[in-house]
Length: 221
Ligand code: SF4
Image (cartoon, rainbow, N blue to C red; front, side, top):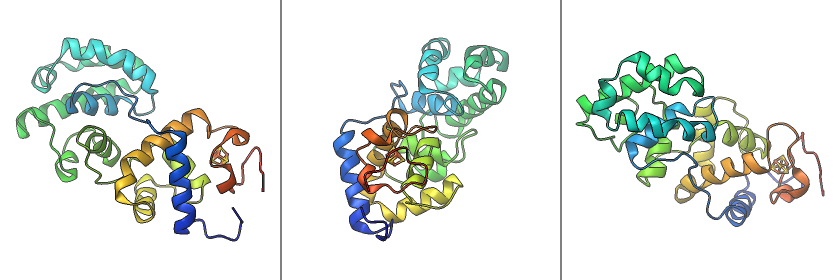
């Protein structure tokens, strides 16, 4: 696409969304979970950690403490031991214990379905809340901005911001709400497979004709 077209031109944005949908038609959340609570826990654990690592840790964690009530009664050392390999395990254990207490005491053991309520849970910021709302409840209240979504949105010039909440606000202005949930799943898939942090694989990228990122490793235009 010509370099003088505004990066936020609706036709360009629509072309990006179409290319992503064609390339990643079945992109979903890679964290294993069977309930909103399990997804919330897995997302808390995924901070600064790969989903593969989280998926190795959660089965034993949920066997030991299958419900929010059970986890609320767990001691911090027990939780720390179980989540140790995900990194930042002391903070994460504290968040899990706090989250389990709030979900079991304030929300009767059920993960709430609104952004405001989710943000009252320890360890939950907008990213985690958006993951749970979008991937479990199918509610598009915002857009998940993780490291991949942030990096690629900037490379595609959909935002100039660097703070996740500001990036999210820009994306929410540009992208139709009906696409919010799929868009982040697709960008996360794209960030893992093609638009990797170092040396993006631009030669094989389905978005390449639409992308003018300064760090491209190949350019057809
Ligand atoms: S062309 Fe390169 S920088 Fe642009 S989206 Fe594709 S992989 Fe990323």
